Image: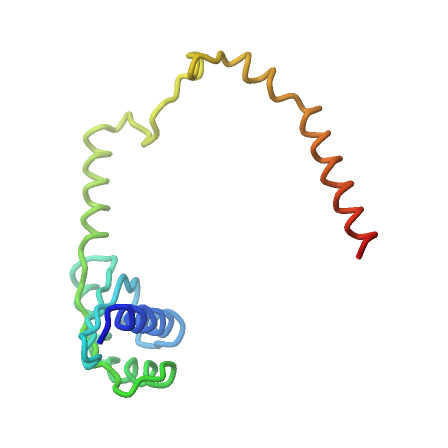
Length: 162
């Protein structure tokens, strides 16, 4: 099967599964889950659903158990929403990328507590040879008022013509 179709099916499955988990699934074990992506086999018989689970290891294990218990129900939601000859069998794979990036960010903040995360910008220097005062002078409010008046006249002329 061509890659374009499998990519479209994978995206459609991702949307159906993520909205079903978020809005319809009532299992209390399934919480703090984000569906990141879906990979579908060429024959559309299997789909790997990559998920991110925020929380400790206990929450992760419980959430995976809840998702595996709801696998059949989620597959029926896919069958209801998508017009496919075969409904793919879902397998849930945790993706730790988001959790790792949050952990690395926390470590960096601990190493450099003075940094606010933003790079300070020195506005006193000139940009491309133009001083800050020159920039302020080039953008006067009168210039914008003239443009607004011209746009208003054009829209009024269109209303009269229509």
